Length: 143
Image (cartoon, rainbow, N blue to C red; front, side):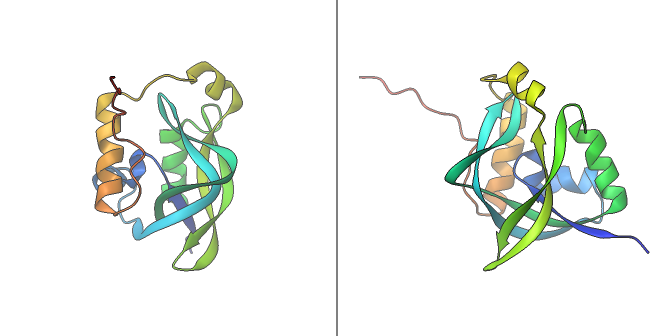
């Protein structure tokens, strides 16, 4: 019997086409919220603990095989570490797996902007799921 997990995606894996390619058969449950975390731009999406912040993402049901594939895609354990988080989905709290950059990756990639292709993947995923889009380009304000 294959063990099932809940997986919280907040970056490019919110995009249904990307997730279908990486983890065929994963079940997209829809938008969910990770409290006390915010998305950080470090070449690719990352999360940081910030009291009172929230990150919207997508909750999936995945298998052990999917988890192993995600580990490879995310560079676990050296680039990203796998963590358990409490996410809010349909007014209930569930424990889910997500990925956070390892400390050395956070330092090495700090303030490096997203590649445009990655930004579009993430932005489209947020749009499809009707959740907050942290991936639109910031416009410079001129006076």
